[in-house]
Every structure is written in structure tokens, then in C-alpha cells.
Image (cartoon, rainbow, N blue to C red; front, side, top):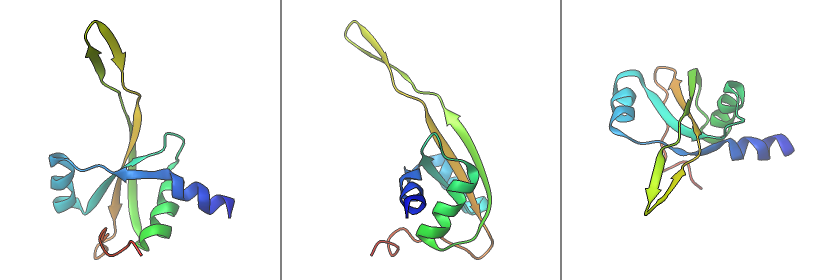
Length: 100
């Protein structure tokens, strides 16, 4: 029970950009913002549990936060973790119909 709750907190959101849409078309890979403490096996188990698809490979990276400036104060956004999830051939994630 606790493990399933932890898996639900791992996937934060999908990361959609021009680069990720090209990767989706060419390699059947999706991009997610994930928790910084998440491992590749945690991400794989979370995707299997939520979307019922078979994952081929996962690549993760830490994205550096950007510096922000407002008036004379300089701040910084926090770093975050991104995961590229490559699905097996024939597998597809349908974000619209997976929500019950």
C-alpha cells in the first residue's frame, strides 16, 4: 500500500516541447517530469501501474534550474529531473482515456 502511494507521487507531469514531440514520433518515447528521488525501476513500475504499457528503456537526467531576476533581486528555480521513457513497439500511452 505504501509502495503504491510512493509510485503515484513519482510521475509529476508530462514534459511537452518541440524536441519531445520529435522524439515521440521517431522513437516512441515520452518525456515526464519525475521526482528527484525516483530511480529508473521506480519510474518503470509507476508507468506500468498507471498506463499498463511495457517499457523498453528509460533515460533520466537532472535539468538545471534557471536564474530569474525581478527588479534588483536575483533568484533561482530549483533543479528537476526529467525521464525519457521508450515504449516497446506497438505500445502507446493514451493520456485522454487513462483517467477514470
